[in-house]
Image (cartoon, rainbow, N blue to C red; front, top):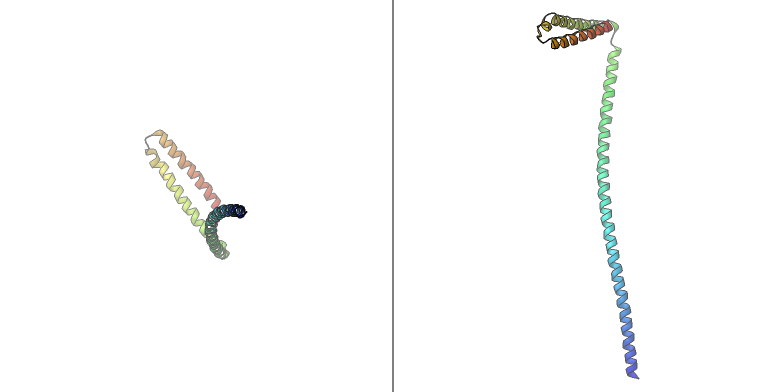
Length: 152
């Protein structure tokens, strides 16, 4: 009878040992799966962190650019205000004198173009080239005349 008890006791110990070994193997597998999952999450988190760092750097660059543009615009506004103030002090007689100087310059250029047409343009041997040059000079003289009239 004691042998039967020993045999039953050994079978029970074997069953218990197998049961716990199986549980230990399941827990080991669960730990491996959890470890792999955590490692993947950590890698994903690192990748996301790198993306966020790059985005942050881009935003800092954009902010710096925006600040520079803002500074430049403020400078331009200041320049425009100074120019407006200068124009407020610009009197009609000063404007007339300046326009007369422009008209004189336009007349001088027109005379030079007429002189070119009268002498130098005729020296161009190729008829097609001479025609093109003459046409361009005449067109420019017309534009000069229109500009001079507008200044007057």
